Image 1 (tube, rainbow, N blue to C red):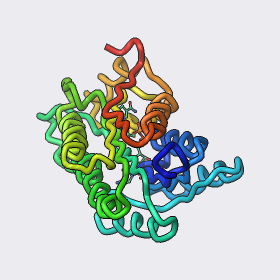
Image 2: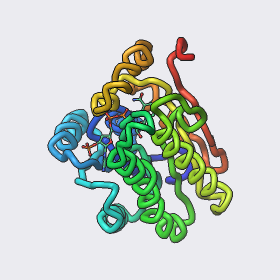
Image 3: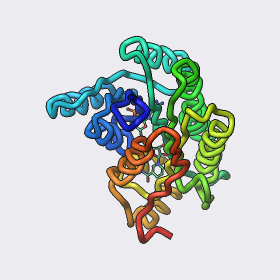
Image 4: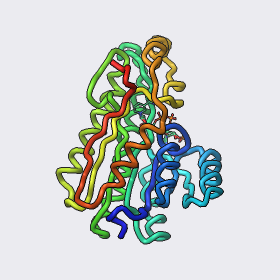
Length: 245
Ligand code: NDP
């Protein structure tokens, strides 16, 4: 059945690059049907074409997670088409680091919108279906920043503390048939830091990101959590470069 290690229907947010793309590829290779979502649908289409060429099962849907209604519509469509949605991987995120006194209020709002509200929109979209089908799994991609703060990371870390708290709250409130996993990566080789605009933060990142692990290492952690039999809930996995302090 879908709950005993068989194929699941999985939706991944932020699947157009980095950890989300690697996770979508890995879960498809594991035999699941993967719905890849993000804003850049051209990139999603390329990944889906490559997966299908390998005989794997995947589809792409354009989705901006800050749009609550659009998120619910995509999830409802997936459930209509496949009869169920087993796993939500809430991965979409932005990391626009800066010191608080740089007052980059627009970037704070952007991080809160994508990393916190975007995650909540996913939870809101899937919970009614999880209730109806009597099972489900939310995998949140948080960060080591869900456990620690450093200069320039205050707001980003706040969004990841929030992601951790929301996922733990969901665990406590959910029917035991609904599983929750937080995956907290350290430094991963992706496009994430390329979007930092603050020069002070960008400079700090150079040394911090010297040691990196590939996105596949995080995808493997998600795959492990998803593969557990019903009743076994892997609640958190921290994956970081062996040399990261
Ligand atoms: P990338 O920048 O490569 O990927 C970010 C993804 O998020 C993209 O697919 C992007 O797609 C998507 N995204 C951004 N904004 C939105 C939006 N409004 N709606 C939907 N999707 C959106 O970085 P990573 O792969 O590194 O990041 C993935 C997650 O991993 C993030 O939550 C990040 O915080 C977390 N993480 C990353 C670490 C790292 O070192 N790389 C360390 C710890 C955690 P698009 O632009 O097409 O919409």
